[in-house]
Image (cartoon, rainbow, N blue to C red; front, side, top):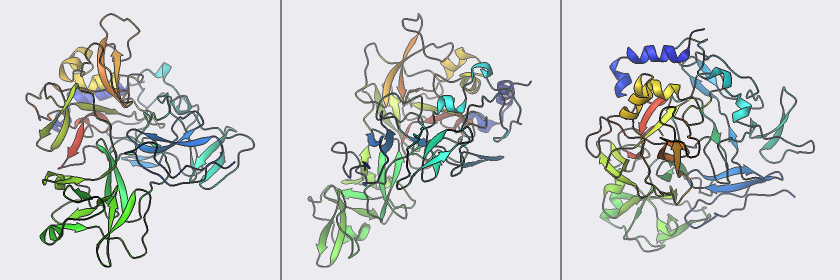
Length: 456
């Protein structure tokens, strides 16, 4: 049987230039702490709760605090993956070959580490419903083909992730958009955010950014007083107040301020809200370049550890190491029918070794070196951590293992720099890999990407 990795390696070595460059509990209507996002009260079956996570905001969790996920349908180049409503397909099958749903590889190629490859349910345990479980609100029970009664939300089967260990962990998936050529990833689920209908939230690596329902960025003005707008006359012609209709009422941390008799303006946390006339695209952060103006977030991402800096690049702002070298995230999803992730140290490293070093771990260390953590380095939040990695296998090192590297990790995934970056702000490694780094490759850690979407 032909190996998928051999085919990937052959494709890599002969790739076109784009490759290299490229009773009935309810969720309370409250936030867990100041500065975190509030959410609506919704009915829940016994045994479920809402946890406000650091990066993804409010998420549904089971009684142990493990985040709940769904596997939404996604169309790939040669077909679709994911689960349709009331039709769970994640089971105990251990796939041995790829599906061929992502070109250029045909189906039937043997997967790496095939003898130890887990099943979908090994990685994504089904959320089991008891014999007396009853539907309520959007929660229902599905009778699976294997006889298991499984909880569903809005008709879609629910799972937990083996990567999540503590309440608030959301390591299995993300609310962020991951691009058209990204794998068919799992998504966390959560209660509706407590925002008025005129707004929505765009998740990013910088936080949960507030935009209008037609995707125009929302801004706050530093010279406003709490609950009072000082943006008048010419200022108001450049920065349009977000007006509240006559029937609108205060909602959570959103309130209404009177600009003048009969003119009502939305405010968030007592800051009047505006859009910018000069904005040329949706969901932009360009208005924050204007002195005294800033984008509005319902919840900001925790600050990275002190070992990191931020740098301006030709495309926006990136996270960087202490020397100013751009930090990269590695993305990977295999092409089996269950689309298991291969972007963390517990998964096969053959994909990464192929795309960063033509199969040679030493070349990978030279091309995309890990961001090393100093002895005793610690994170003050949950999304950043220090991991011990065996550099020759790319997997977790055994305790006390000689030659192990202490590296920084984001969401349990090590982060990297790139050998071609010679000065702060260089992003030569962005989109390096298959399908612009979305399927198997590297993306810069974009805190702000003005000319693209940063893979979000």
